[in-house]
Amino acid sequence: MPIYTAPLKDQQFILHDVLKITAQTDVPGYDELDRETTEAILGEAAKLAENVLAPLNAVGDEEGCTLENGVVRTPKGFKDAFDQVRDGGWTALDCDPEYGGQGLPYLVSTAVGEMFSSANMAFNMYQGLTHGAYNAIHAHGSDDQKRTYLPKMVTCEWGGTMNLTEPHCGTDLGLIRTKAVPNGDGSYAISGQKIWISAGEHDMCDNIIHLVLAKLPDAPAGVKGISLFIVPKFMVNDDGSLGERNSLSCGGLEMKMGIHGNATCVMNYDGATGFLVGEAHKGMRAMFTMMNEARLGVGLQGYAQGAVAYQNALGFAQDRLQGRDVTGTKAPEKPADPIIVHPDVRRNLMDQKSFVEGARAFTFWGASLIDRSHRAHDADAEGLVSLMTPVIKGFLTDKGFETTVLAQQTLGGSGFTREWGLEQFVRDARITMIYEGTNGIQSLDLVGRKLGQDGGKHVMAFFEMVKSFIADHKGQDADFDKQFLDPLKAASKDLQAAGMYFMQNGMKNPNNALAGSYDFMHLFGHVCLGLMWARMAWAAREALAAGAGDTEFYETKQATGRYYMARQLPMTGTHLARIQSGADTVMALDAANF
Image (cartoon, rainbow, N blue to C red; front, side, top):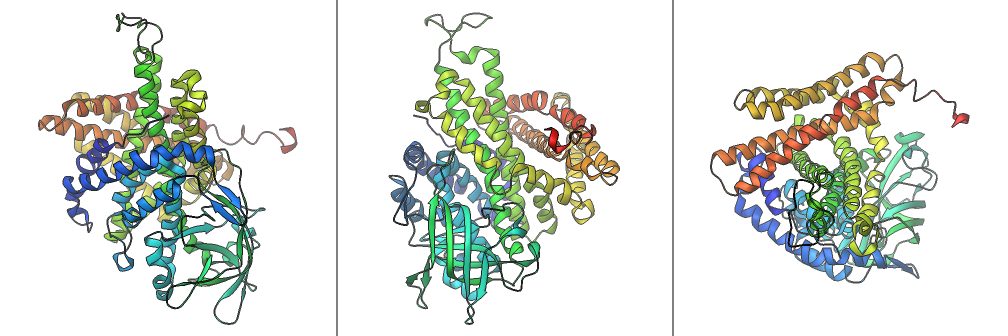
């Protein structure tokens, strides 16, 4: 059976040594997040993740969910665990106190979410989808809708979902056929079928609040004609009690490669009563309130699966005896040395470790930008995190899946068996590259929309951020310059050169930009992790100079950063070369010749 240990020390390092959150006094709530406070919160979350959620991960995978007479049963132990999560207030961490939330920064919720996702990704999706639906109603719902639904969604007494995809359309939502016909009393009759609805039906909540995209009879064509509706599983009476069952049902469960513990449903709406959220024909704007948070959450899922896979690969490599160290026997009392002595195993583990720790810092930084945007009303932070969202989602899930495969490879044949659990991490991580917008779509969004947003202001701000970091730290430590600043500068130049290529060639032939978009997303991701590693290495240097704490931890952090800068960051050159090769080779074949 696999194990999981929450990365509390590393999370604290990022929060306090790298991001220095208590010094960000212009972000309301950050001044209260001292080390003792975050240690207490995260420590309790870690106990729940390690002792309650992680042991159920294999159970959920093996048992899956079952559909009986329209009722979806979750795996054994899930409901009790969900009650513990709910009773502990973990579903309400960053929710509005007006509706029963604790009002903590989103960054705290992100740190907790990583632990819960590593421990049991399929389980954590139930509350994750509810949180996304809560956000959409909180941002776009009427005061009456907020009073009716949000308090029970904050506590997860009621669940929530997003209903976008239909059998004939996914990304191109303008093609949806689900209809919303006015009933004459302010409500609407919702009819249609939605597929791949995570947590669409289950037995852990008293009610489920579905957010459904549909079109009114007079809707314009395309995405400009989409509206968003609240469609509760059970109608809610004026006094807040539950009334009759609505005209909706789960028509089936998807048989999936992974995340078996989460109910992925076909949802049928047969004239179900729904209520318009926000303005008619403005549903995409409201839904994307959910989608943007969901995409950040999926990026987190990607590296979180990589993190738990790495932990188990490391444990195996330290124990498994095979062969002898070519430079000299390390365990003469044993019949062979542990495989961690071998350079190729070290390379494999260092690829995993350097990605996971860099991705954690990148995601936490992204969460801090969301806090700055929402709490300090910082438009620049909002623009920057909007730019980063497709990078966080696309790059971290691609590399997160790759990390689970590397971890599986560390175990050799054992990694291919169910007993050790690595194959589940691989299967579960795979969906992160697909849902909430495939990674190909993320790359198109990045190049086609986000780069040019607000006249390119936000990507220029990122370049200036990198440039300023290099200028502020240059010349203080020759080794730091050579090992971190010089590689970061070179990688940033590659990113700028790619952007310049798009400007010079994309206008003449848009395919030149689109054919390079996926490489650009990865190039951007590497530069972001390079910046994070430079920041972490400098923070570790400062801690060592101050004689603070665990010397081995800070020295290990620097060594891991040097590995990333030397062995991973140079990939920016490869991605740039692929981008600059243009679209001709990509588009050379006629469709019939594939």
